[in-house]
Image (cartoon, rainbow, N blue to C red; front, side, top):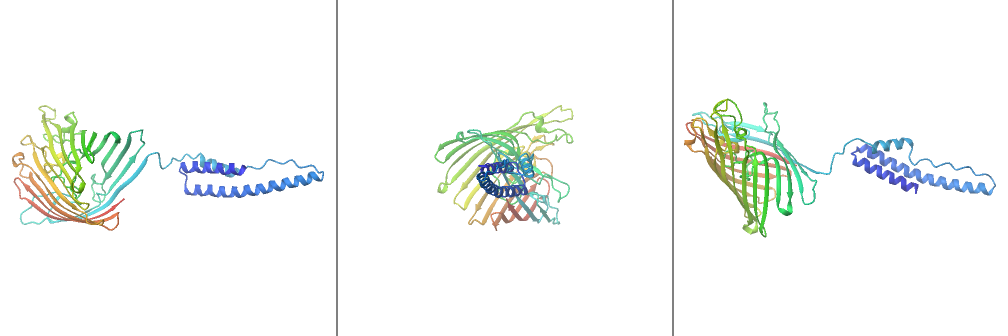
Length: 458
C-alpha cells in the first residue's frame, strides 16, 4: 500500500511539474527519484518481513521483542524538498488553453529592371524616361519576409473565437539592410458557424476587391488594376445557403478612413480623420457549382468615404470630397489544375485604396481624380511541384482630371511567372513582366523586369 501511495504521489508531482513548464533536467530528476524510491520500497518490504520473522523467533525463545520503530519516510528530506520546489514552481507555462499556430515565410527577391521603376524592390510604375539615357537598375531585398500567428479559442457554446497577427518588413527604415516591421493584420473574430454569421474587429484587408493578382512582385497588381488595401475596421458577415453547394454572402464594414495630409497646407491634418465619420464598405457574392461542379464565385462590392480638405490652417473654407468605387470580382476554377481570376473597378479619389496610379485629388483643379481599371490571370498547376501564372492589368486616369505634366494617366503590366517546389516548404520562382506608364506632359516609361524569388514557407 505504501508503495502505491508513493507512486501516486510521484505521478501527481510529475504531472504538476509538467504543467508548470519545468525543464528537461527537472523531469530527469523526477524520473531518477521515482526509480530509486521504487527500489527502496522493495528493499523496505524485505526488511520488514525479516524483522517480523526475527520478532517471532524471539517470542518463541521467551525474549522480549524490540519495539518496532516507524518506517522511515518513502522520500528522504532532500528529495521531499526538491519535489516541493518543482510542485511550487512559479514558472509560467509556455502554453495556454488557446491554440497557437505560427506561420509565414522567408523570401528573397532579386530583380533587374531595364528602366528605373518606383520603387525598385517592387514595381509600382515606370518613371518617365530621359531621351537617350537608359536607367537600368538592380534590387535585392528580404523585406517581404512574413511572420504570422493564428490564435483559436476559447469557444463558448455555439460561438467560435479566433485572432490573427501578421507582419512583414516593409515598414520603412533608412538603410536597406535595416528594415522596420510593418503590421499587416491584427484582428479578432467571433463566428457562429450554424448561423453562418461572424463579426470581425481589427485591421485586415478591405471588403472590396478581395482577390489579388498572382504575381511574385510584392504589390500583387496594386496601381496596375488591382485596388484594395488594409485598414482598421469592424466587419459583419452573413451567409445564406440557397441550395446545395450554392451560397449567397453579404459583408459590410465600417472602416478607418485613411486620407491624406491637407493638400493646401504643408503636412497639416488628415483629410480622412477630419471628415469625422467612418468609411463604409460592402460586398455581395454568390458561390455556385461551375465547370466540373467546382465552386465558381462572383462578387460585387463598393465603398464610400468622405474626406475634408481645408484650404487654410484655420480650417476655414473646408471642402468635402467623396471617395467611392464599384467593383466586380470573379473566380472560375475550370479543372483541378486550371483556374481563372480577375477584377474590374471604377471610382474616384482612390489613392488610399491603391488605385488612380497613386493619385486621388488634384489640388490645382480642386477636384477628385477618377480612375478605372482591372486585371485578369490564368493559373496552371499541372503537377504538385509546378505552378504557372500568366496575366495582366491596367489603371487609367482621364487626362482632364490631372493638371501636372508629371501626372500619370495610364499604367499597365503583362506578366508571367513559374514556381517550382523542391519541397513543400522550399520554392524557387522566376517572373518576367513588361510595364508601361504614360504621363500627361512627359515622356512615357517602359520597363522589362526580371524577378527571381527564393521562398521558404513554414
